[in-house]
Amino acid sequence: MDRPADLATSLRELAERYFRALDRADLDALARCFTEDAVTVYLGGDWRLTGRHAIVDRFRAYRRTSGLSSSIHLVGTQAFTVGGAGAAGHVLAIAHLEFADRIVVRGLSYDDTYVLVDGSWLIRERRQKPLWQYEISCSPVGLPAGPGRT
Image (tube, rainbow, N blue to C red; front, side, top):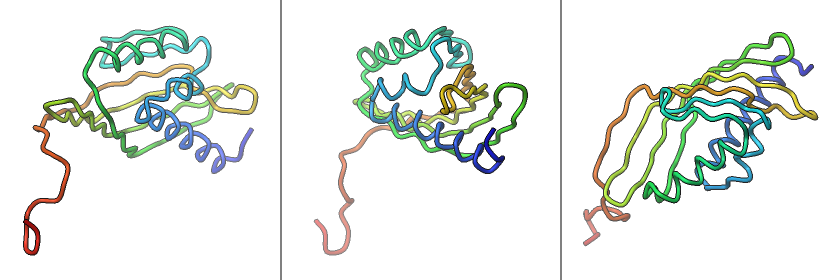
């Protein structure tokens, strides 16, 4: 088993890989974050998915039908404990989701169970819960007018 500091680093890197995969819409990388038999609950229970393929298929369908054009996830507080044959974690994040007419900003909580598979930590169970949300309208990308700028 990894030393506690190494374990925390490995699990933080897993969280970063997961969010990077979402933000890049890299579904192959997303799949590599989960065990084959992973169980997930997203959106406070609206999405209940079992198996790596079901998880990836749901995200693929969402990207295709929702109008989501880009996302940026920022990882916040993370805490991990080791027990039995795996580890547990609590991860907080803020998601910025861009659609054609608005940006949705959400505070998210993830409660996870991790297992070590062939030397890599993977998510076996994930329970995501939205904590808060707000929406803002989109504006063109560019610096606002100001001194010396028209």
